[in-house]
Image (cartoon, rainbow, N blue to C red; front, side, top):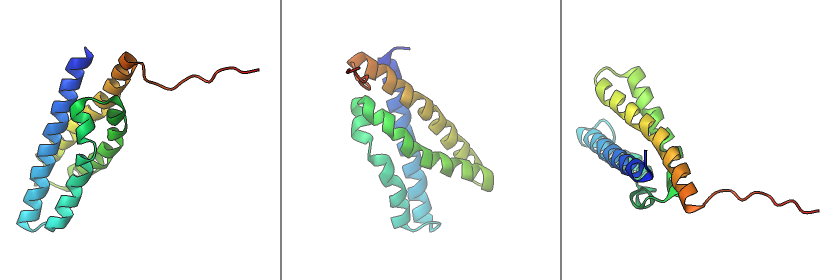
Length: 125
């Protein structure tokens, strides 16, 4: 798979996740399940890496996976405890799992294309 197509898939998946979770948490806030402030606090971490993800910066793709882990815990917890939102929780968990595979893979491939990476320690006598 080329880096460009992987970038497009990861970016599309992230935007889909952002829209899915924004809709979910706003709906929860409007229905009174959560307060609106609490609902908005759930959306803020997803907005932190948005610029780097949309522009394709490999470093952002590498560290954004840590943020996704929080939402994976949310999705898996919902799968375990709810019956009403089971389909939502399954979709959320599967989408995040795909992103957790795609993000580091893209970061590695694109970083190698750009010549980024950890520098090897030189041997000095």
